[in-house]
Image 1 (cartoon, one colour):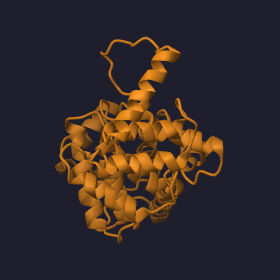
Image 2 (cartoon, rainbow, N blue to C red):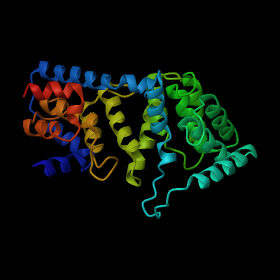
Image 3 (tube, rainbow, N blue to C red):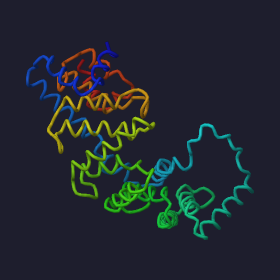
Image 4 (cartoon, rainbow, N blue to C red):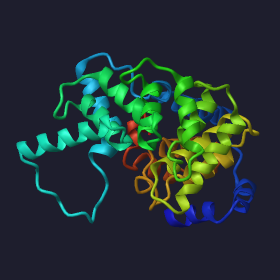
Length: 311
């Protein structure tokens, strides 16, 4: 039942009209309830949308922020690389000295790594001002990872005062460089909510569509998340005609196995549970509602916790 239902949705946009034609009219209050619950779902993550994990107010929050921000640098993904033995203290001191020399000589990669080390306290005493200064130098010298780090820092207020305009400008700079589209989804979000740029729903939609298109060829959580956000624009009628059927189609698409986190995207799963429970954009279906409520992570969303307790 689950497979057939999903195939019907993914067969193409023409399937949406067939679904609409077969829908059973529901009481208006049911659809209104679904709208209110979707709005509540979309509001749940607004603190993170705006603050991106900040503000960082104490040493523990700064440490966690550094681990998150610099994870891809300190834990590079290389499943086929041989595991390197740990360096001795002497080897680590020598490596740090080479890094310092390279950074002072203007090597951008070394400057970025040195800045990261100041934030993480790796071989050096923690020093946020030194960390920012070296990362800024690396970005000025054209290091794209440093530019991304700096943009994220201004976006969240990590090590610097929050400056959404600077963050957006740096994200836009990265967008102009081939192979640096990891920021597309975040930039779309900034246009949707007017964070550092004027609100522009059409621009947000275009950026989300670019990010979503990456799902066809790459393993990308950001593609999956962008698909959810396209659905959100349709559900709220932002820059497009409000269309709950299209919203449901995009929410379902974002849960396809094999993309992102293996098809698990709690906000989309919760949205689908709400829509099947209320007949909003889809035919009411208790089995589909229960399926989406029981998916891993769905009950992380508060509104779906409430939905579960009412079953």
